[in-house]
Length: 77
Image 1: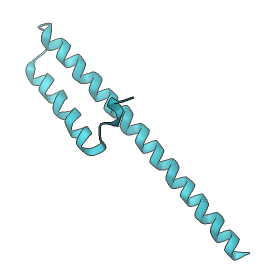
Image 2 (image 1 turned 180 degrees about the vertical axis):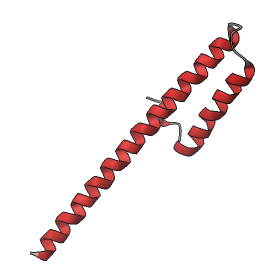
Image 3 (image 1 turned 135 degrees about the vertical axis):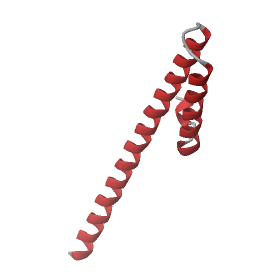
Image 4 (image 1 turned 120 degrees about the horizontal axis):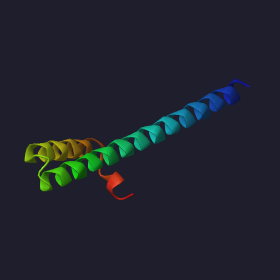
């Protein structure tokens, strides 16, 4: 019986880890999408005289940092 309980515990832990990983991936995708929207808004504002090049550069830098940390998978979705 202990072998069965050990296997059940391992499977439960594995499922928990997979769920956490999926949640982390979804959160990273949402953050990437938000940064991409911010970049678009900054660029639009810059082109229509109500924004600055510095704001666009800052948004681009934040997006590039996110991509370096989490990859660019959110750009394909």
